[in-house]
Image 1 (cartoon, helix red, strand yellow):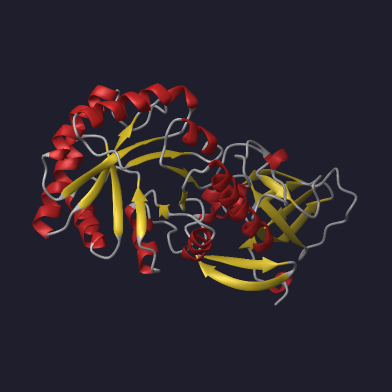
Image 2 (cartoon, rainbow, N blue to C red):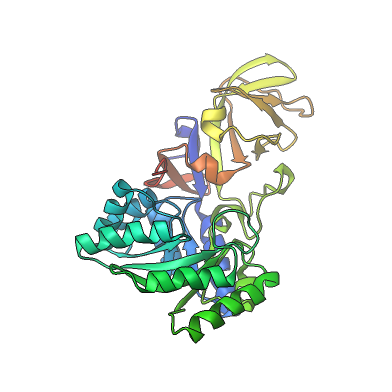
Length: 347
């Protein structure tokens, strides 16, 4: 099938770019001698995870339990969830999942660790835990090496859980002392530090320098090896995703309307909202719920209702989460269709 035979709007992945991004990151980590644990929250597609594993990733990372469930259903069996899992419904799902795969979970409080311990003991399983450190992100994490030690000592006494180490996000060379002090305190106390997990696409060298045993990278798979800061950086050579759209209205010579709006691209503040591959001078300057508003005043082309346009979305992870399927293309031909199995899995 030719891509222009597809109904729109539809989410498309350039397989040549996808495979290159996967291999480039795998090679980078191999050259740095830092094991890679890919983060899947950007793509949420088990088949892409398997391509990453085949390229050398030692396991995957899922941000939410629901994402991990979709990956285990697809046969993937080594997963880190760097997220506090809180509440009986979720912890019951965690223990059930742990009987089907290796599931490592991050915690940053005694309350969260106790909840997992209680349910795991009741359900007859053991959950590996790592402690998240707040090394400057201002999000989750214990606030100092001594706080990490105090939590580790409490976890070490619990049943149903197995302390494995620590994690940080994002990896940064300025936190090397924070990491080393924490590791030293653990070792002096006889506590396990089998895992020192760093993270963030573009932070692989920093993960290596601060002593991590693995690095978590995710957005690179769709966005190349650097985070996308604005639409001027949306390159077809690095960015995997395109939203194939159709021109549904040409109200004026300077403005056209495409059939993808906020529900297709995500309501993301910066403007323009993406890069139109065929006509880079056309700018998506606004979006309503189901319409994309495109300024074509700088284009010499005369647009017609029915024309197809390929748009690289500004935030490819958020856009991916709005679609059920991902169509893999090579050149202008459809090669495969993948279910985005983890989309909407926010629980």
